[in-house]
Image (tube, rainbow, N blue to C red):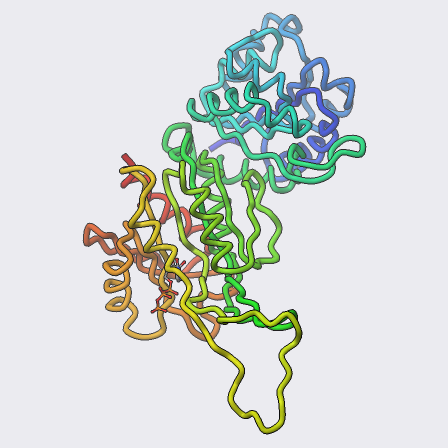
Length: 402
Ligand code: CTP
């Protein structure tokens, strides 16, 4: 196989300077890159920079090197097109099939996966026109990664920031690894909700009841779902991990907060995956001041009440007939028998059964599991990176989506 060919489209936003770093990562990791800026992009970063960093000629117009028919060839020969930053204007043009410069022509001729990394002010991102354009592009199979939240141009802060170039590079790498369009973006147009991490149930301002879930498996599911084209809502409980590029992250602390966030996001979701470790019990009372041990009172000051079972509730109250609900099971003994019983009890479609214990599953980079299906199926996933397990789980999920 030859060198993978990437087209880096750059539209006219201040974040164009960050695309230089993305370009450097792509070339250094062995990709051939053709940069196609818009005329506005050149106000931010000049032609010489793109040309020097890519080692290829750069043009914004269809009228240069006409004998090579660049408006058709560049798109035809690409294995991946990534547009970073993608402005509101560029997204609108792409959604409507306009072709008034080299980049928009390239977008119409490309038959490979296309990744858009939007960057703009929050108001522009949230405008119904932009949201409808994004939905149109996603429905057609494009991967539009959610902008990050943070500092924008000037004094403003909010959603609309270009994700870190290293993160966009990782999305590109995963998309390329999945091969040509079609099977690669099999979650395009789907909304998936993933919970990750472990809940903490506060006792007093100092202490909580918690568990050892790191959130890494849930985050791996989020990253791989983005690369397969999904719109991803990640409900993260106490993870301390960086937001994966292209996802909407909702941070929560307790089981009750996690329940509220997951049920809200699940209202229009195609798939809900409960990878979070949820506390089954919480303290009956929260003490506003630090609980003191008092001499002569040997009874531990701890009374617990049951938390709702979110997975069972999701499975029992699906927002649409086709919605899939996936759970995880952490078991130390009789792993498969307990897993089967849990699958039946919770009523979900798939259950990923993990054997947990010292140095197993929690906190590690690798995992192994058996995925049980409500249809009686049983799929063993061998020991390997958490992203490999995530991709296998998406394979099983996609096969069950109607
Ligand atoms: N779960 C949930 N709500 C809870 C507890 C667990 O939604 N209150 C979900 C977890 O996110 C996971 C699945 O249920 O997807 C199984 O979690 P696990 O801790 O293995 O099982 P439990 O239901 O807690 O059962 P047990 O403690 O008896 O093993």
